[in-house]
Image (tube, rainbow, N blue to C red; front, side, top):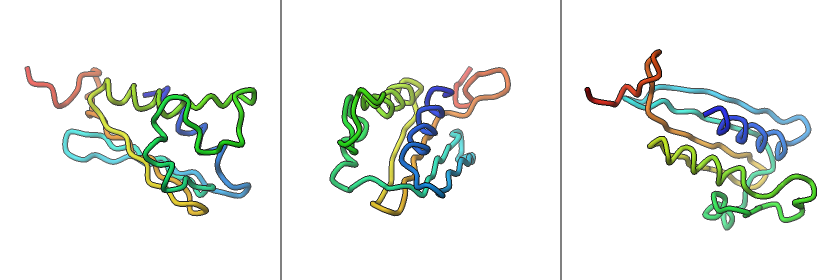
Length: 118
């Protein structure tokens, strides 16, 4: 989850407005922990949303690989979340910001999923 949070925060920082805000919050929903990463940035066009988890896809085509933007961050997040039996979704609108919602099985302090049966 550290890699997921780091990637989501990096995107929120890179695509936020100069005086924008970034909010992280969590809540419990049954046996899942839900993480929200919200920004007040430039947003993502509706036509780009279905592709944002595709490898090498960049909604902002003005950014180049030479600048360190390969279009892999969200694809990596999705792979990690999927492998942990979670889900990830993005809601966004141009000039209104973006909210990424990650649901993953809650764990107890021993690191075991609270949804596992013994």
